[in-house]
Amino acid sequence: VGRVGQIALNLYSQRPQPEETPEFLSKSQSELLEELDKLPDEKKAGWLKAKEKCPTLVGEVHRLMFLRCELFNAELAALRIGKYWNRRIELFGENRSFKPLHLGGDGALSSTHSSSDNSEHDKPNSEDEDMVQYTLKGLYLGFIRPTETHDAGGRVILFIDPSRLAGYDKNNNDERLGVARALWYVLHNLIEGNDSVQKLGMIAVVYPHHFKKSLIDRKLMKMNMESISGCVPIRMGGFHICHPPWFFGKIIFPIMKMVMPERMRKRVRVHSGSEEKVLGNLKEFGLSQEVLPSEIGGDVILDTDLW
Image (cartoon, rainbow, N blue to C red; front, side, top):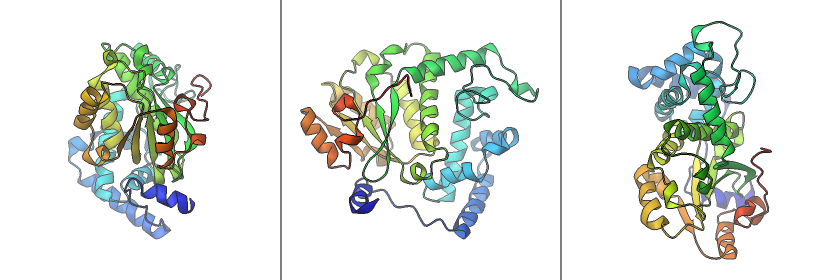
């Protein structure tokens, strides 16, 4: 990534990935399987189900994402895999969680679920269809969108606009779960098959300027933060809060501190002031105007429907 990129990589005190030689990878995979075997039954229940019902989804490529996320600490990677599969089943249900997390075809978010076999967990039902529709609604809200750009350190940029949650009913748990599943879909869309994202991680640029107090949903914030910090195998470089509303410091940030791990709280940066000032601050973190969305004065036009 060059000298500027190396500086950007160090901005969030993230440790670099080790060199992935064939011997190192083979040893790491073996250690991870050993650590998975050591997990208590309740912590690996989902993982064991996944191994039985979707063995092609949990092979070396899948496990490598977790090893990279935890810098090849096999014990931590095993714990994350256990949490991941328990939460994935909780969110997507027994019928859908063992399918690839993509739209169409045999994906978990296909509106017309079909399968080549007739096993009981592959049979569609109205509850499955409702789950898919709530998830699609969560996606179309555009609450969280990839910019398809990177910071100077090579991290992918995720744009979050909480004001778009105005389109969902926070008193409806089905809709809340739909938004939570939408986050999983977006993250998997970014990390699966992308070695660079798996190794370097991502940056979240958050724009709560038009967010209203009535939209605050502590349960959703907790669910999403648990997914990012302990389940989905993604390395979070930092959170940049841009143009926060007046009540952010009194209400939102205290909630964030309750649901965020300490290491992640240290990587939160708040940028206030004029558009020019905020863009200048972001540039110091390797986030130039060319890679930022137009909502905050950048050059990237985000089209949720097209995406």
